[in-house]
Length: 93
Image (cartoon, rainbow, N blue to C red; front, side, top):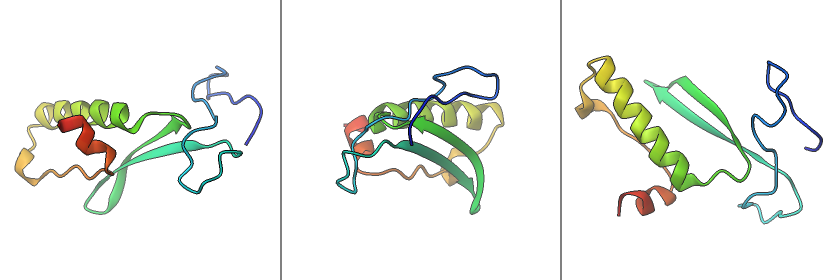
């Protein structure tokens, strides 16, 4: 991926397709990230993220957003699970 990318409104820089931490050991390739939220196996939330988005920051923001939505819609939190990679544990320690 290369070049400038625009959002639907024509704004350049909505996300940054850039060099991030490559788990495939390919530091020469640009990347982006995708965050997905599911309910009963159906995708109900998706976010395209910059390639260098920090997992710890993303997890903290997403947990706060989810807690707000659950409260607004009066959803019982006992049936809610947040699944994340190992970076999540650094957020809660």
